[in-house]
Image (cartoon, rainbow, N blue to C red; front, side):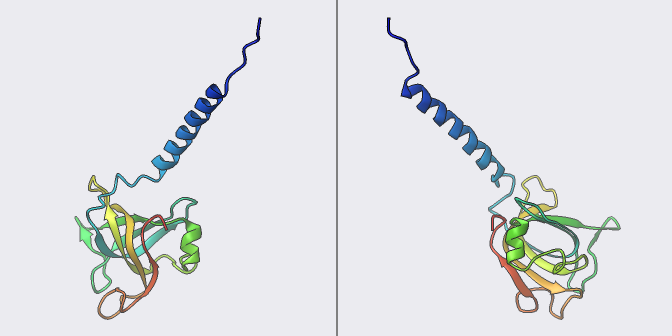
Length: 153
């Protein structure tokens, strides 16, 4: 009687299943389905926290008006956040905790969350304007473009 061994078919099927499982977890992490990519919102704010991350960094900020004063809702500053590229890719573009300290005024274009919460994924330029609002507001003419692109930079 001949001893049966696993055929190459079984090995190939197992490899395909493992590869599909790995790819699905990788793609799931990089899904931007929660963001409304049909909308791009440009906001100006004052940084309250920079959260470096291996996959994506986050900028947490309070909205400011054209004079640099906090925009209030029900007597409280409106807070937003934006997901950017990784801390390493941001650093290559000059964005680090030391070059982008708390209180820095900046403008960013983002794709907002679909559910209406005040958070988004970076969709355009990140413009750094310093510690005070420049004459004419914080924009590409009055500030320095640090990053141009999406959250997956």
